[in-house]
Length: 218
Image 1 (cartoon, one colour):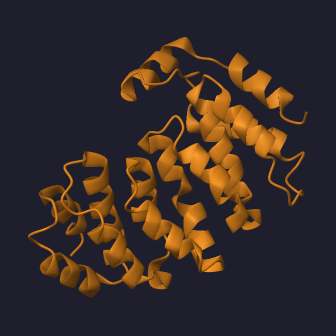
Image 2 (cartoon, helix red, strand yellow):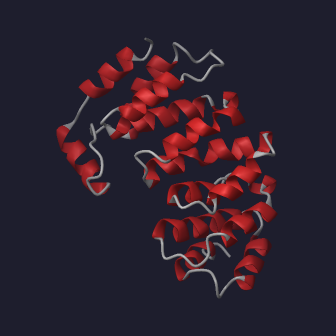
């Protein structure tokens, strides 16, 4: 397969010292090879050039990456999806959901926000999926919904954003409250008045962390 060399070269580039440091940073939840972003991207781009003209998403490759013990291979799968995001459709959401809910932590989950932002623009039905995820028991699906419009700027659907954020009030979960603040902070760069109004309306329901993060630029 086109990616056999990618796997071999990536794994053979292991740096034991860096791997230990990177694993410790992620609270030793995952094994690392110790590849920094630039080194990983250099290897990935070399092999991706073989298939970049294809309009198909190679899910076999993606799930092989996800099944690998080394965390960098999950990063490579996300790099691949970001390169191919214009070919991702709403029919791929079940596969994306499997990735989000497997080996879940912020470092992989946050990599999907651009993909879902693009899907929201292309497929109106994705709005209902994001609303459903925003109330799911799985915190990583909820976080994905909260930050799915992070990069949409003036295309942000504020009605959707408000509903999603309101669905997540009242939690003590750090990764949810941080995400709420992040989404507000990011949108405040485009529409500070809306964010000010939102914080004012829901001040008593927002966590202190969400308010602090959301108010950073206003």
